[in-house]
Length: 144
Image (cartoon, rainbow, N blue to C red; front, side, top):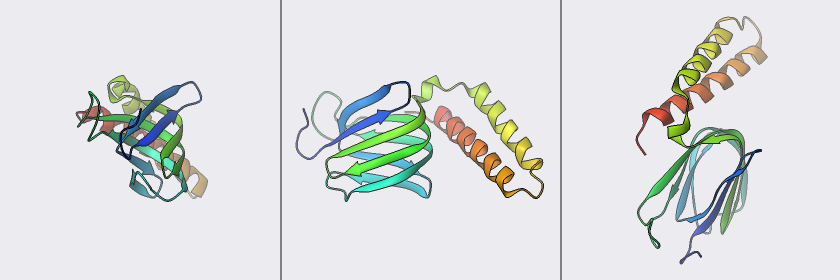
């Protein structure tokens, strides 16, 4: 049960519901940059970028003062005054990230970039692959 003014946060992938809990604040990687959501936030629908979702709990329960991080790759977020629903293409806890695979993904994205020529679509695809790989590597390299 939520205490005070907490957000109900759900992080959902096509395979499973990864998170269904309460938090005091949520940091999200929108495509235009990170944003923070607090209880009472105006309704919002935004495109999710690649990066970390961080759930902060400052009060209540055994996990008070802790935060949880999840690396997400693209999707959408719906923000309502009392809840946040994150629909992610992929989501992992940082410890589950396969670093060698992310490094291969980064190299592949760089190769795509170098081969893009005059194609805007090819550059956009390469940038997408590179951003996702860099976000995974950053998440795996930082401490929770």
